[in-house]
Length: 367
Image (cartoon, rainbow, N blue to C red; front, side, top):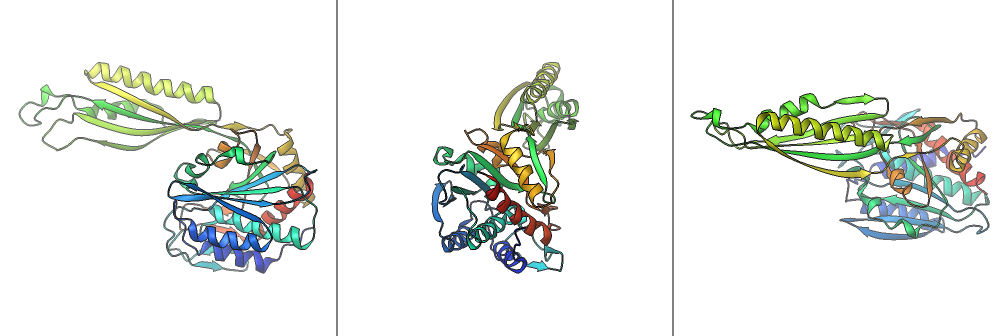
């Protein structure tokens, strides 16, 4: 069922992969994508966001059927300035000098070829929206800058997870960022070190006592940036670190944040230092029941093309997190990318094909 043209989808993906598109510099990929979708009779609109734009594509259909959204992103991580795709009988890689960019150009190729198949084979469908965001890799900045009220869809299908086709992400974490700013007391490091309070050492003690890495099967904490001091002959007066907390459960994320705050307060008090903590919520998490209509539709569409649905949790965020904060019920799906964010990245050709078949099957399943 749904025989996707192998050569066409491989060429579409390679064309996309070899167009440089670091975050905020997605224009050339956008131009290519608009051209391809306009050839299919779609309406394409861009919406300015930061230094780039988000792209919304609309395919008109039967208004009596449920409108649906497909979503992905146009930017890739670096290095991506000169991507050279290498195609074998089974997979596509880069030449080893860059990422491949299947995160998330696989999704764009899947959407183009799926809609091409739908049009060629005159498969009935409702109104379809495709939202392609910019700057997703910088903390979902593109979709955060898009007015989701512009969308008319009831259900969303985001193709932005790794692994073979068949994975359905039903849980994704809440994610908060924290900045700990410790202030000690400066003093000459050679002549009067005892008069100083070394903020770097205080911060180091805080970091050594707070939870680290995987805290439980739903929660993680990572200290990712640290800085402080001005010179080796000055007892460091200030030190700063940036960390993140993620958890499937919002309550648990807040509990871990409190542990960080309590340890910071206690440690600073013991050394006579002061601390200030800034906290921001990067994005909300989501949990989707396997009996939720969007999950049921996805599973049915997979079974229709002889794929086994696998419901899993993911530790990373995606545009799905933001879409679920609107009235649209969205789910994240694998698009076949493997070893992403590295020069070892690859995608199996069978997963590109199955991804397009799945998109067609979803369109055909939704009534």
